[in-house]
Length: 258
Image (cartoon, rainbow, N blue to C red; front, side):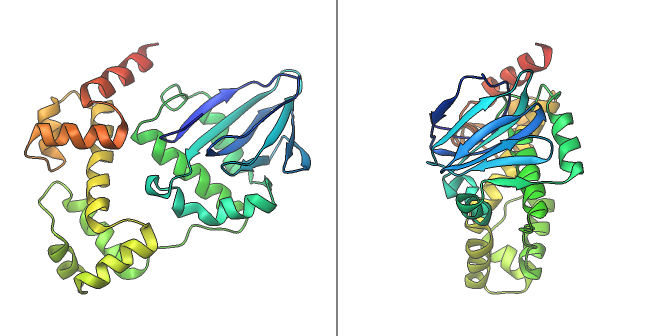
């Protein structure tokens, strides 16, 4: 099974043991009951404030207790989809698949388990919340997400307030006060993407949020996020989120009224 975007599911596991592996990363977070797991010959019960973190390709077995419920986060293993930002967590999980986390994250999981927009979704909100969960888990195990370096933080802040305008690498570098080559190096080293790609992602994340929460036309939303050509916006949105803007909005509206 292949996962092309971050997603959450509420799962209840059978008491009959199963074994499999998948080509995406997975985090299993407890809500109720216990899930007996074996990950690379390491056996433990996932419950209370203990999560299972399973790197892509890792075979694992599982069997649930009566009345169990778990929040499962699946996220792509392809660094191009942002997974590379959390390489340290997946590397740690290869040797330490069971990780203790704190009460705030446990409470957050309880909230997400009742959020119909998050469960089985794959939109911008889901991607942002997924990153929040992963970063909270990283902090719990001493892998706090690194802060941006000062010039990169300045560049990101500038992009976040000007993404609807025409932005060039030259303009961003001038605003930050560094050379274009240095700007490229910062983005590639810290975010694993080019400045141009980062601007495009910010625009499309904002567009997805507007499609979910705003009744403006698609043409107006395209203009708001910096696309003068609606057809170019539609193509870019489909590449990023796997659906046309109109289909994306319809699916979100249907989920909200279900």
